[in-house]
Structure formats: structure tokens, C-alpha cells
Amino acid sequence: MGKKKTYRGELVDEIRGLGQSQGLNHVFTTFLEISATCISAEIDPSNAEEREKRYEEMTSAMDPKTLNCYAHMLALLALAIHEHEEDPCDILGSIYHELRLNNEWNGQYFTPDNVCRMMAQLVNPVDERPEEEDPIMINEPTCGSGTMVIGAVWAMKQKDFDFRHKSFFVAQDIDIRCVWMAYIQLSLYGIPAVVIHGDTLAMKEWSRWYTPLASVPFIKRECAVNSTEKGAATSG
Image (tube, rainbow, N blue to C red):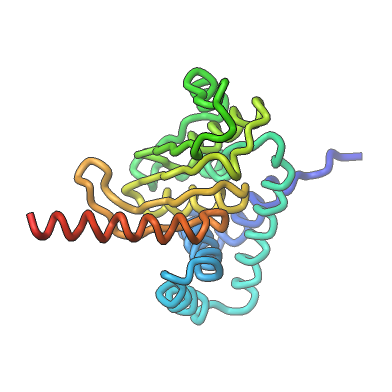
């Protein structure tokens, strides 16, 4: 009897199958945008109208079979992530490398899980941290597929640290495709985070993507801070 294929393996097969007629890079990128837009439109009122419109633009031109393929891909990814709930890893980043898409993505390379886990353990800020302290705020300025954030969460889980209530992540990347990869995975892993599409060095920002566990109070607080900063910058 052959070994049962994992949900991750089924997802790779699904992408390759549709990619035979539409191109692997196109299918993978479209899958990322559709999935990220769909999640965000459901949980972020501040961006819902814009993202619902974009979702309709993408899906209205698709035949039902193709649209069902993308829906099935997202379901498979959710199941694959559920399988790794206790051992979080960068599923989309590994698929990206398996499909050899780096040649079409300007040679981008995402750090392997084991390296990210080691780095997170070396700088793990949760040891001997009092429970009453405010949540840990962690910034990843070049997040790629989200692998460093996922590695940090893995390290927190090794310490039985309640990352869902006692941490918040800010992840940024200049490549919108990386933003979508990170956003989808952090959302499905239940990680409280905002993923920003922007240029960290130039301090430019084009869009924000809040995960489902990014609480409404945090969003409101961030918006207030941003408005104050922009006002100060304008008056200066």
C-alpha cells in the first residue's frame, strides 16, 4: 500500500495541475492574492470594500472549474496548517521552492524553518517574563513568506508561552506576493499580526493586512497613532 499523500502534497499537485495550462507562477500568485483578499475582506472592515471589489474583479473572469480549484487550494492549505498546529512551519515558502519559482521572483530565497527556529531560540524574549507584562511586540522588517514569525511562534510554543494573547507581530515586505504569503499563513495559524506592504528602509507604506486575531482595539489604537504621526509630520 502506498504512503498516503499529505494535504501539502495535494496542494502542490493542485497547483501543478492548473499550472500546466495557465503557468505555475501565474497560478501560485493568483492563489495568493485570491486567498489573502478573501480572508481580509471578511475580517477587516476598514479594507473590506476595496478588497471585496478586487476579489470580484479577479473571480468574475474565471470559469467555475478554475474558481473551484483555487477554493480547493485554500482548503488544502488550511488543512495542512492544521496538521502543523503544534509544530508550525513555513508551508507556502517550502512549496515556492519546490515549484522552483525563485527564477521568476528575482531569485528570492526564504530562510529554512530550522534556521529560523534556531535564531528564535537564541533571542527568545519570553523566558522569565512576568505574566502581567504587556504583550511582546515583535517586528520583522523583511518578512518574506513569514517564516521568521512562524519560527518565533514555534519557539514560544516550546516554552508554553501564550502567543495568541501575549504577543503581537508586525511584519513588512516590499513585495506584495510575500505580503500575501505571510498574511495567509499567519492568519491560518492564528497569529495576531499586521502584515504591511511597504518599503521599510524608505519608511513607505502602501497597504496593511490584519490577521483575524489582530484585535479591534489594537487596530483602533494603531490608527490613532498613525493619524497623530502623520499630523505631526505635516505640521513639521
